[in-house]
Image 1 (cartoon, one colour):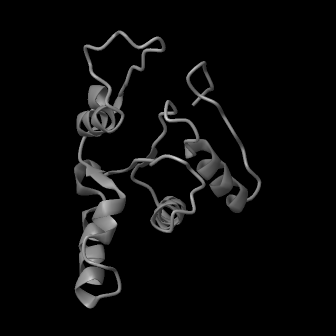
Image 2: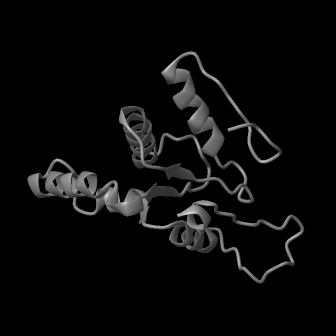
Image 3: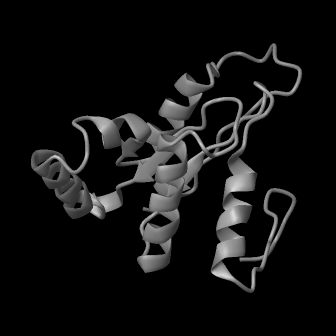
Length: 144
């Protein structure tokens, strides 16, 4: 993927620096900032980043003055077994009931994620009165 006016490319030598960069990217110090954590299907590194962000949000240590939405993209039920495991953790009492569900929104499609973000940030699809209009775009639904 090449960088364009919508994408910044950052390379990190160490994984810990990458995670710090991810946290810095989502911090909302101004109520007009519209950021989100979006976890796509991935492997060990993705899970590491995902749980680090969840823990920081849970402990209110993400450094943001305003709430940051976290979306888990469960395309084709990719994360369903992980969600089942987290339910078992609740059953065992190692995670409080409803705790994980309160930290993120599980989405099965881009349209569901975009609708959630529009609601979270109170963005109306017909509202063009904002000086800096925000548009939500998605490509996954177009290619799937």
